[in-house]
Structures are given as structure tokens and as C-alpha cells.
Amino acid sequence: MGRPARFRTEDLVTAAIGLAAEGGPAAVTMAALARATGAPSGSLYHRFSGRPALLAAVWTHAVTDFQAGCRRTLAADPPSVAAEATARHVLSWSRARPDAARVLLHRPADFDEAHWPESDRELLRTANAEVGELLARLARELREPEETAASALERVRLAVVDLPLALVRRHLLQGHGIPVEAEDLAADAARRLLTPRTT
Image 1: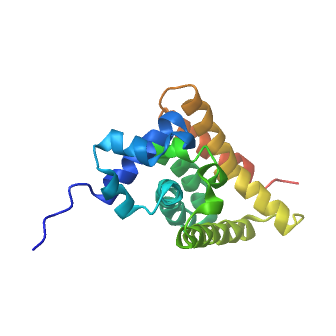
Image 2 (image 1 turned 60 degrees about the horizontal axis):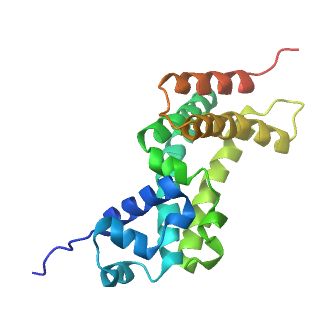
């Protein structure tokens, strides 16, 4: 039986996420990760073919963890519950994982997406498409009679993604944690935006 790996890939990615949270994408280099973890360069290059693969691991780890919760909440029933639960998830996940949330304040392009291994780019495309389909389904269920499909989707995205993320951004950029009551605020905003209007 071989010896267990001294440096687990998951631990290395977590350390790289910490580097990104503190210094942005530019701070994530193989050398910086080696210094932060004490892992030899050979061990890092065994896990990641180069810096683009490391950057891909940072982004995909953060976004797939975030989206796993989104998929659960968006699948809830009835639609109003799904919307409020998703808005809450954006805040609760970000509060529990502030380093990963700071990563997601950026864009994949900031993490050199164009040079990622194709398998990582495909993973991101697939994950985004799955969440996109769930958002579209929620928009269809909450669409008002006079709305176009595109308008309904914009309203749902604003309610359950854009406004909650704006709260996350404000709190994280101010340099302090996300308060628990921010979840209630996000859920209330979603409910107000998505409650059918009376004529």
C-alpha cells in the first residue's frame, strides 16, 4: 500500500483560493502556492499542469460549490419558495465561504479562462447551463401574463442572483463579514420583485 499523499489536491486548491481572496487572480501562482503550503514544485506540477490549470481549479471549485446549492434551492416548490431560498443561499453560502465568495466577485476571464484545459472549460459550460435552465424554468413559472419570456427571466435573475450578489459584494469589499440579517433582506427583495402585481 502506498503512502497517502502529503499534500491533498483539495487542500492545495483551498490554499490557492485563499491567495486569490487576498490578492486577486494575479496572486495565484505556482510559486506563491508552494510558499503558502510548503509543497514542493514537483508536487504542484503533478496536480496542475501549469498556472492556467491552477487558476481553473480555483474558479471551478468555487463556482461548482456555489452552484450546487443553487441547484437545490431552484428545484424547490412552489416557485416563490425556490426564489426566496435561492436569494438566501447566495448570502448564506458567501458568509460561510468568504474566500470562495471573493473569488466569485471576479469573472472567469480574470482567471485566464481562455487558457484553461478544455475539460475545465467544458465543466464550467455544463454547470452554467444547468443553472441557466433552472432559472429559465423558474421564470416560466413566475411569468406574468403581460411579460415576455425574456423580461420574466431578467426579473428572476435580478431577484435571486443580481441583488443578492450586490449585497455580498458590498459587505465583502467593506472588509467585514456578511451579517445574518442580510439573508432576510435578500429574501424580502426577491419576494417583492416576484410577487404578482395586482391590476
